[in-house]
Length: 114
Ligand code: 5GP
Ligand code: ZN
Image (tube, rainbow, N blue to C red; front, side, top):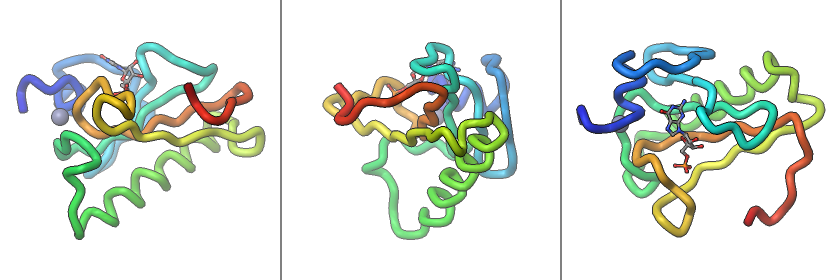
C-alpha cells in the first residue's frame, strides 16, 4: 500500500507529530485540527475501512480505544471530556482510506454532528 497516506506516516516516509507508537498502533496529531486537541490513532496494518474488520480484530480495536483513552489523559482532556469517532466511507465522512480513530477534545461538542 505504498500509495496510502497513513501507511506512509507509519513508515515515516511522511512526517507527523507522533504522540505514541508501539507494535500495532501509531497516534499522531491531525494536520487539520477540529478542536484544541485532535489526534488520530491508527493501526499499523493497512485496513481500508471499518467494513474490512473481521473476527480476530477485537484486540486491535480495543487497543486503539485504550491508546486513545491514555493519550486523552496525557493531553489533559479526560475530565473535561472528549469524543472518539471513526468515519466509514463517503456518507460517513471518511476521506483517508486507512482506518483511524479521531480523538477530539478541549471544547464543547455538539450532537448530532453535522
Ligand atoms: P476522515 O475524514 O477520513 O475521517 O479523517 C481524515 C483526517 O486525516 C482528517 O481529519 C485530516 O485532517 C487528517 N489528515 C489528512 N491528511 C493528513 C496528513 O498528511 N497528516 C496528518 N497528520 N493528518 C492528516
Ligand atoms: Zn494504509
